[in-house]
Length: 114
Length: 116
Image (cartoon, rainbow over all chains, first blue to last red; front, side, top):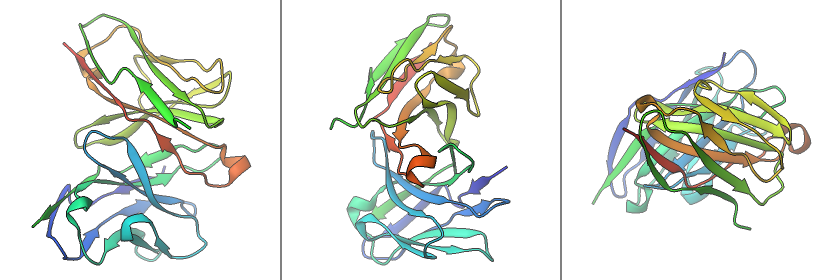
């Protein structure tokens, strides 16, 4: 069965600092991986997805993630944090097969300090 | 397009009551699903549907029923509410994976349910 692990349930950075949110996956087949963002009291919004076309994936709002098969990782980064980035971030893996079922990590709450 | 809509936004139930959470999408998506979100546990799949008339169980289906009579609607029924079902519920929809590769899933704004 596929799974994802997000290290760090809370991450705090200063405005302008690097953002690094960690995600490791477990999969017996080449995975499809996603990062979603959830702003307070809202639904989830797709940031980016990995579909094997390129290992470095660029998403919205200046975020990007790099797929590293040797490390089974798909960490999310942003060079310079902005106050508006404060939100909860979820890594997810597609279960594969004929459905679009997603397996989510437990989430990382990002706080940005001024 | 309104996207994925959910009603109600908030609901309080007493133990043993039943209710239906509504979900609708206007994007003609084949795939729809229900998740529950609990603190520290991320989102867990309750039920999903790959098209009208076809539903299947996800990771945590007990205590919930679904049906899919139309492409647009995918209601979630709680037959006899329990305090353990206190959660935030999200509906999501997307194109079918076989037809559209790896499509984005669109999420509704959620329903916050409290069972006392």
